[in-house]
Amino acid sequence: MNKLVKSENIYSQLTAIIPGGVNSPFRGFNQVGGCPPIIERGWGSHVYDIDGNDYLDLCCGWGPLLFGHCHPHIVNAVQKAAARGTLFGASTKGELKLAEMVREAYPSMEMLRFVNSGAEAVMSSLRVARSVTRRPRIMKFEGCYHGHVECLDAAGIEAQENGGPLALGASPGAVAETVIADFNDLQSVSDLFAKYPGEIAAAILEPVTGSMGVIAPEPGFLEGVRDLCHKNGALFILDEVLTGFRLAKGGAQERYNIQADLTCLGKAISGGLAMGAYGGKAEYMKSVSPTGPIYQAGTYCGNPISVAGAIAELELAFQPGVYEHLEELSNRLVKGLKEVGGMLVQSVGSMFFIAFGPEKVRNYADSTHFDYETFAKFFHGMLEENIYLPPSTTDAACISAVHTEKEIDRVIEAADRVITKLNLK
Ligand SMILES: *Cc1c(COP(=O)(O)O)cnc(C)c1O
Image (cartoon, rainbow, N blue to C red):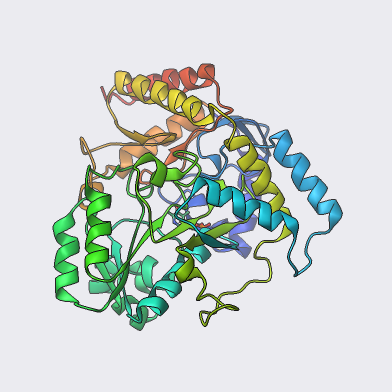
């Protein structure tokens, strides 16, 4: 039994002052129960809590940490940037360098803007899409996550029809303008374009989903959505906040050989510093203020510390062999877990997830059959083995390039013991 005496004490104080004790809901262990360890520090592939427990980290900050914790190249760059000044409210050379690095990886992003988070990147891209098309509606895909964005987080079918939990507090107008298609189902996309002719500004989707399980796009799906968008005068937006710089240097767009009209980035772009980016065709991005009428701004956008962290992160990511290495580690893990059996494992590159119930997930409907109770038991079994998975059966776990084969094997062995103990085989 891990001892969480100090964590329990701090957590109970946190819950008195911060809702749920967390500044982002899934960090709380609501889905799996129990007290979340209060983290003191990280190092490489490990995190350490205030009770002195040492966990192998498979959450990786929910995706961003492509090189684990405290990579010296990133730490050094951030420290140097902080010593030069934390914020100027004026342009720096670093922004030019970073923008060029992002465009090198993402040729579809002819021009781009840096923002502070993935959600900001998404909301800014939607504003561009609505403005350039002069249309109100956004098509999303049920179960795709896009962050804390008014018209998207509140737009599950359940939320729309029943005023479900996510809809509370969202503007009814924003929610009403959202139309919802099914992932991996082109018919649902063309039906919506037919139902709302000339009204849909853009379709936005995760090219590989990370919040209803890790689901790959079926062959032809992404191309089909793109073609339907273009046929109907709508923009094709890929939300690569999770997949960007994680699935390949050029993210899902490189992996699946497709280009988006607008792309949203975040998470792994900056190795753990607050940062997002959005961009695409120059003709669209030129309509952003001050060259155009679309207002988007932010005091901390492109701040020197996040930019320095991002440049350092991308310098590491662009070294040869990084993604091949991640792929090998991930294949080893997934193969091992499948050999253990008793659980559903799906992965794309270094994103994977573990669930119980269905044999396969290819859309949101499949993901509603997950067995949360069994996952909670499995999660706590793994935590006892000092392995820290994301405390959510629907969310992607990640590995970093600093995880070792030995650590991957440790995860497989631990999973074997937990699955055996739970009698799941
Ligand atoms: C995490 C995530 C977001 C939101 O990013 P934040 O930085 O948390 O605002 C948006 N889209 C996808 C696909 C994500 O995984």
